[in-house]
Amino acid sequence: MQSPPKKFDFFLAPLSFLSSLSVFALVFGVFVPSPAEAQNSYNAIKNAGGKCMDVQNGYTSKDGTPIQIWDCNGSPAQQWQISGETIRNASGKCLDIQNGLIYKDEQPVWLYTCNGSAAQRWTVTSSGQIRNPVSNKCLDVKNGKTGTAGTSLQIYGCNGTIAQNWSSGSTPVSRALFPLEVPYSKNPNCLFGGVCAGKGDDIKHTGVDYAVPSGSEVKAACDGVVKTARTLSSTLDIWNRFTIIEHTNCGGYSRLYGYYGHIDASVPVGRTIKRGDVIGKVAYWKNNSHLHLGFATQSFNNGWGYQGGDPLKNGWINPISIF
Image (tube, rainbow, N blue to C red; front, side):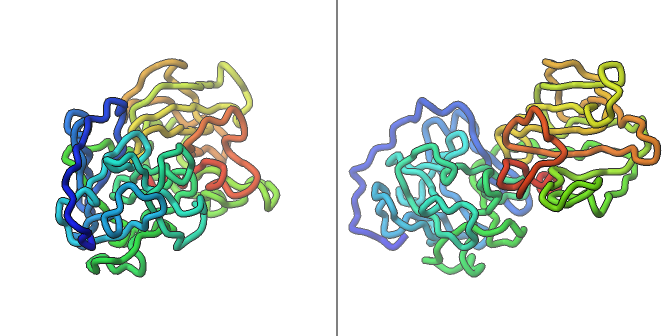
């Protein structure tokens, strides 16, 4: 922090509204404050260069104050509380994407009154990226200057560089498990955001297709509850044979809907499942048997395989990013 006049007549009150926690990760491990710790404490958020996320000039109560990295010093400007899908300080201000431009690369982040907008939603991947789950942009140190105090923070397309790695806390988070154990191949035309199956150019694929033999077991990527489960006995239509699971604490997301397409379910609706539980088998589809795997931050009753426009803007995420 660029040191302001010293003022430490500041008291941290417990936040009783905390009910769930997002998580942060190091390059080599994933950590999250325990509920007991987080309810009464704030933590520094560090980057791969050993610098801390900092409110510029220590103006912890002022809307519009830029966020930067600075030498870690334990000041209130570097204390953050993880609450649901927000990152807030003790003054009740939230980490916010400036002017709500959540899809714009290099858009700065600042401090702003918490308002529940998409610009204030943050989750993390299992590799430690702090990500806006709506735009899928990552919190990023500008120009990659991870060791330079005073460097501003922004959002940028997630790229796995050290400029996007952060850490805080001490309890492991659940990584997503890849659902297949058998060898597979990916249809190059049916990747995330691609055009396949004779659909028009404006109809985009919401997941990734993994070609495997029919009868191959499919496992749950994370813990969750089964919301939809269809089998050969419930429909002959291969397009309508799929399973939807509402996952929790999955690959850095507090809630994530998993769409497992073209499978015959072996679990009923309402079943609570654990990461790695078998949920079904890949359905028979002549020479086209495959698992369609998709993940979204919201629930869709239809159009789970294809939707118009950019799938990232419709709440879908690239499934490859959470494993």
